[in-house]
Length: 387
Image 1 (cartoon, rainbow, N blue to C red):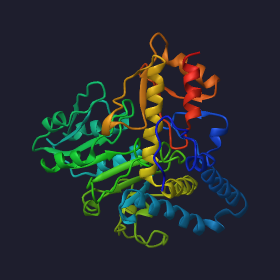
Image 2: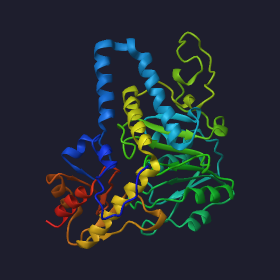
Image 3: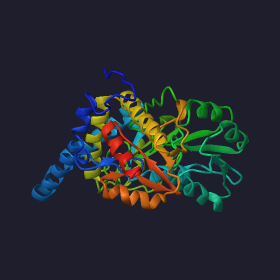
Image 4: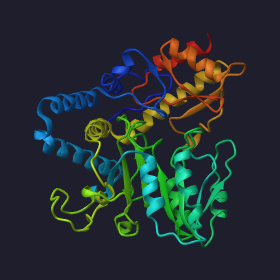
């Protein structure tokens, strides 16, 4: 459907121009910060604005309509990863999804979780918080952002219950081969949790072909959704494995019959959704998911890598030092780099003043373009860096 093109071509040309036209942010900014917080597409903005209008003018008379729109987010989220809707819970954050597993898993003193030392804090603290229950968190060292699966395997033993990793490293941009992680875990009778927030929406994932056990991702990065509206997945076979945390009226089969008090949990991941949902957030997320699915995740991923490769090429040409492992199958849309002789925080401020959005992380600069980012945006970035 989408023709391949060389890194030197105009990456804003059709069909990506159609996507770009759905991104109001592109009228003002060269936006390279999708690994932090993404701007909303126009359809999502419109859906949220419509909800606000209805909430002000109609109150809860349209609540059933909102509920159906929220369920569309669940269905589209399931479609995105090849799951069944019954395996997807709607959560407020990646952290909430991780905590559902950390707090709900049937741990025994002496068990351990294996993860990576360079994980985002959300994929560390929920596991470290289990120390009081006798559960050890083993943080595997990572050199220069490159994950060695042999090290991960060596950290596991007969008491390893879960291997928890980020699909894409938030600092390094290293993209894990999840098939190999699953293979490693199965050989040790461990389960796999994936923090997918830096990869979901850009790269294809089929949880049937790559049988991870749990996944969580908020929607405000590559999924182009609002903050506070995310997805949690668990394999159907694990539904009764996790003790539900935060049980509320929405967790039971008779959710809207408030006079019927019986702890009959829903036979789906909805049992983890406790109480009132962020309806407006999920309505917006549904529209963003639809936009990405219409373009095709595999196509989005190819174009994101193409524009990231172009950025790396141009950065090197102007003396930038790319520190992300940006070659081969481990590369992603995240590119961390250094600009020798320049303070990263100061460069970021200069870039913002010139209409270019990027991040400064751990003394390095980080860009994260999306599918609608054009070659002209890359040149705008470079012009700021060489100024």
